[in-house]
Length: 173
Ligand SMILES: Cc1cc2nc3c(=O)[nH]c(=O)nc-3n(C[C@H](O)[C@H](O)[C@H](O)COP(=O)(O)O)c2cc1C
Image 1: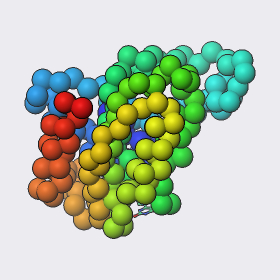
Image 2: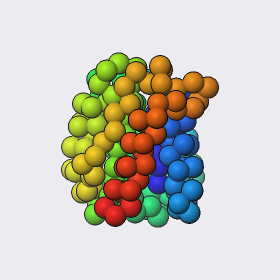
Image 3: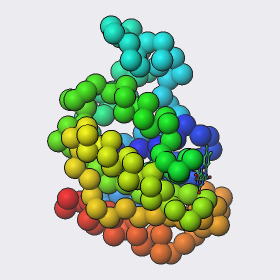
């Protein structure tokens, strides 16, 4: 599963996620793409931190897709020096510990500044490790993403190469 880790629309993370999905398709690997703008707005009323939870079919479908997935690729934009709050909401709302424990993940970060989500990915790796997820060491950082993307297309050949390297590593991870 590829997670475009923001609810912002339009989002560069979504475009990178779509490119990533196409790279996998070229290798005959089908990856479900989950964009977090699909997290239902009423999640707080029905699900998040609720005991008991109320029915929410939109969230149930997301939960089911996560249960099915074994490997996760998180495309993480940098928001205020960390990862987006909606990503933490998504993690907090998932059934614990069965949703993620023992599964595998890799991360790719992007930002307008010069960190490329380095700290964001470090923060999120701690969250994933707490949830029992094993993470790939190689984390591409796409800095100055606005200058390296045009009309939703990644134009930096080094960034494109880093995606291929990460895919190669993650397949055997
Ligand atoms: C709420 C918010 C906070 C941001 N904070 C940072 C930041 O701390 N550092 C940075 O370099 N860019 C920051 N940016 C810029 C984003 O990293 C950049 O616009 C990136 O394209 C966002 O990904 P998205 O298009 O998928 O939302 C921020 C953008 C938003 C919307």
